[in-house]
Length: 177
Image (cartoon, rainbow, N blue to C red; front, side, top):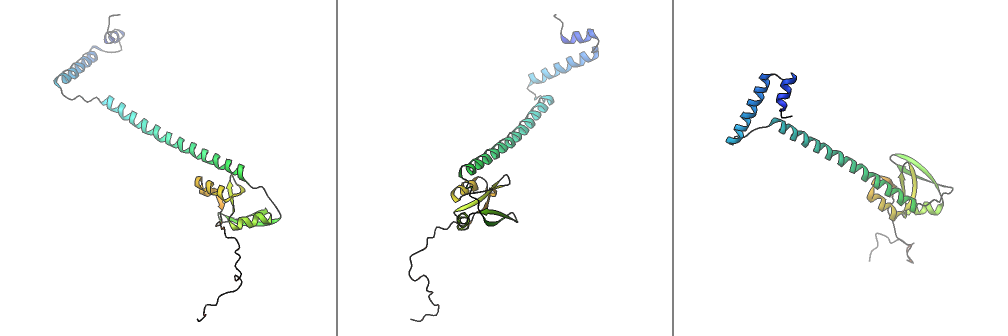
């Protein structure tokens, strides 16, 4: 039991006497340099540190990618939830055509819903290749999360018909006073 590893390797025939002397001399040289204060460069320690640093960088990049994927899934789930809670399921006989990424799509709607889409009070959103109609306020919340989900968002106009008695009469440009 009192035998060192070096003695055990010599007895087993795995190492030779010459190798044992070289190892002992290298150990003594290293200890002597440390005692003198000379810098000792340990290549294996440097390689291990370098490998660990590379592994840490790789792990950080992988974690950032996973976090980004999880965040995009959470945003998509929020959008789907907003649509489910606020969608307008009115379908009718009047066709409403709109442009989606260069393709003309058609929805069958009631006249009132169609007019609200034109005025901008309602908007069309698309998630998972399904088109839904939602109020303008919900569409703005969806656009904050993902602008590509909002397919049609006309300018919201709040102009009510005014009670101007002279609205039908045009003022001429060349009126001289």
